[in-house]
Length: 399
Ligand SMILES: O=C(O)CCC(=O)C(=O)O
Image (cartoon, rainbow, N blue to C red; front, side):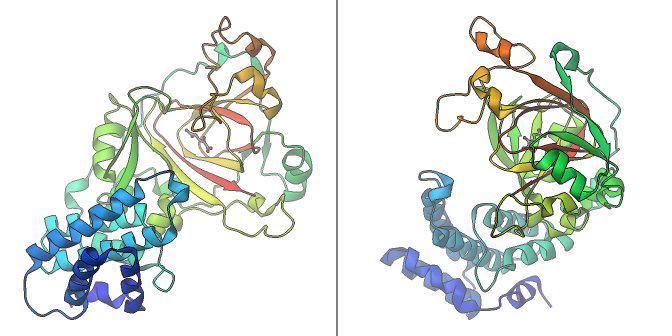
C-alpha cells in the first residue's frame, strides 16, 4: 500500500479536517475545498497547481499565527494549520515517494506539529503520520562517532554561596516534608537508573535513527538575552552535525516538548514519582510539562525563574547551576520588560556591583548536576544553568 493511502488510514473523522474552512475568507475557502476534495476524492493529476494553492493557505495561516502573543492565538487557527499541513502532505506524496520528497513531507508534518494544535477527533494524526514517514526513510548515511570527551572547567568557585544538599532517592513523604512543602532545592540521586534513556541516548546513532530527519527548534547564540541570539528550525541531524558535534557556534535544543512530537522517545523516560505531589486541591493528576534540553558544552540558560515546580533530570553530561530564593528577587534586578520579567539582569558569575549594588545581599546556592541525578528547583526559584560538556537533560514542570 502506498504512503498516501497509509496516511489516510490514520484519519478517524475526515469531516473534522474540513471544519477549519470556517477560518477562511471566500477565496481561501474555495481553494481549501478544491484541495480537500482532491485529497479525499482524487480525480485528475494536477498536484503542482494544488501545491501552490495549499501553500497560499499555509502562508495565510502562518501570518495569523505570527500576530500577537502565542498564548492569544485561537486554538481553531492552530487546528486549521494542522489540517492544512496534513492535506499538503497528502498532495505532495501524490508527486512521488523518493527520499527527498518524503523528507520534505516530514518537514511539513513537523511544522504542523510545532505550530498547529491536535485535532479533537484526530488527536494523533500528525504524530502518527510523522512516525510512518520517518520509518520509511533510510538512516544508513547517519553514522557518527559518539565523542563526548571535551569538558569545560567549572567556574562555580567564582560564586560565593552555599552548596545544595543531596539525598539518595528519598521516599515521597520525606521529599514532601523536607523539600517540596518548604520549597527547598535538593539534588536527588539514584532515581533514574531504570530509564532506558540512560543507556540508549548515549548513542547518537540511536537518536539519529529515531529522529534524525525530524524538524526541531534550535536556539543559536550563547544565551537568550544576547543580542545575536536567534531561533531556527532544522532537522535534528543538521543540529547534531553543525552545533553539537562541532560546537564552534553554540546551538541548543532547549525547552522543547520533544516527547509529544516524537512519542518513541517518550518511551525512554519515566515521570518521577515526586511529581504526584500537588500544591492544588483539585487537579493534581495532570501530566507534567516535559521538555528536552540537548546541547554541547557551553550552553547557558541565564538567571531566570519559572512559575512551576521543576525536576531537572540529567540524563548525561554535567551542568553547573546557581540558584537563588524568590525572597532575593529584588537583589537580582529582574528586567523590566514584560517579555523578560522573569529574567535577572545580574550575572552571578560577573556581578556588576556598581550597577547592581543590592546583589551583595543575595544568597546563592550552587551545585554540579551530574549524569543520573535530578535537581528539584522549587517554583519561582531563580536558576542559572551552564553545561560543562555535551548534555541531555529532561525537565518536568508540574503543579
Ligand atoms: O538546563 C537548562 O539549560 C535550563 C533548564 C531550565 O531552565 C528549566 O528546566 O527550567
